[in-house]
Image 1 (cartoon, rainbow, N blue to C red):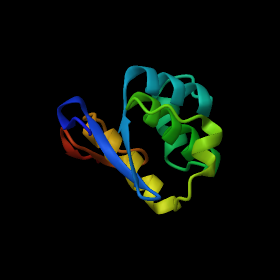
Image 2 (image 1 turned 90 degrees about the horizontal axis):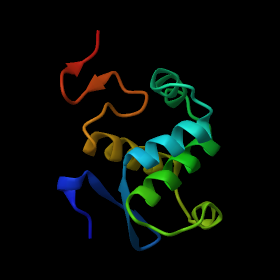
Image 3 (image 1 turned 120 degrees about the horizontal axis):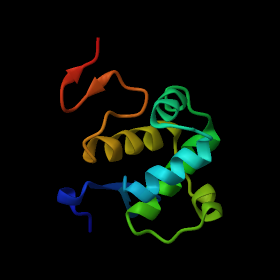
Image 4 (image 1 turned 180 degrees about the vertical axis):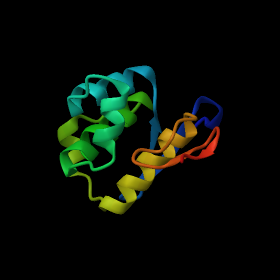
Length: 112
């Protein structure tokens, strides 16, 4: 069961619900996996992610949500790119941050 007040979101895959959460640990893991030297670098990398990036981000968010799947187990899950992208965006939004690659900041609206 997800806790929205904590910034958790549910992600349904293959009939099972997984909890995603953008914790500081998850954010640090995402930075490392994508080779980002700063949050600005990370933002740039998130605008055009590779499939490998999406898996790394999803795995970090799952760990942040308390899931115990290994990266290899995440790779084996049947999923669609659009669903993964939407779940990642939802997790970033639930944490009160701008969705990856988005020009909309939930705190202040569209960026100009």
